Length: 166
Length: 106
Image 1 (spheres, helix red, strand yellow):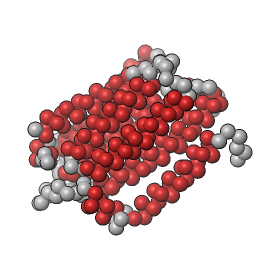
Image 2 (cartoon, chains in turn cyan, purple):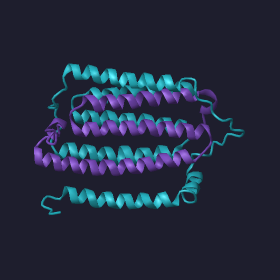
Image 3 (tube, helix red, strand yellow):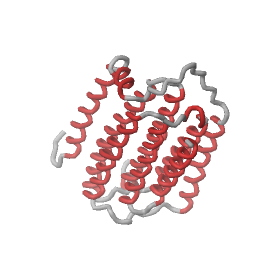
Image 4 (cartoon, one colour):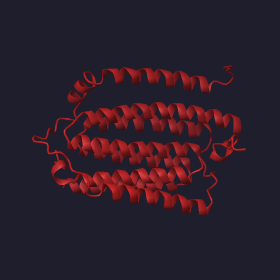
């Protein structure tokens, strides 16, 4: 049963990712990428990582992709006006990406020996457990992430201002 | 809840993540719109996130999921800063074509 769900979600994510790459219109690319993200969120739910699934939907589909869509609309790029790469370049890109995939699969095939967990804990991805780990073992990285956000916010505003003398 | 750990080998997640990552690489190589190139980078980050979450669940170790959380934080910051830079580039060159950015080439 879970194998069927996994297969459907995996096929959906791969198909939508390919459509995202091959669609000419950038706005359609954004929509297909959002659908890919929903399929990946389904994988998180299947892995019993509910916190990650919710955060993934909120952050990616809710914030990042809205930002992308907003910028596309702001720059008035919602037409298929993008020039395409030459055919020889596309062939080279396909060969390069395919070789990368072959390398990954060849290196990782059958070589994964997971350590035997004696009692598998299905509660590991819930909010209670993750919050405890985040605020005990990972407090310092959490605070540094806050500083990173502040720096990014200031940087984005400074870059986006029209007449700023640096 | 469905019991994923018993029924799906971890190899399937490895293959799925590799495939998504390579689709992202392919998109970065063939697209010329800089915004779509950034979106393909986001897809590659998501492939890595999925693999980290899968290993975290299979090993019952919460640290992998915390790492996914931090990758999401950095991805959000990267998207905001990158799109700010792209808006500025568009204001100066009137396009988001990556080939309009070869000023340093010669």
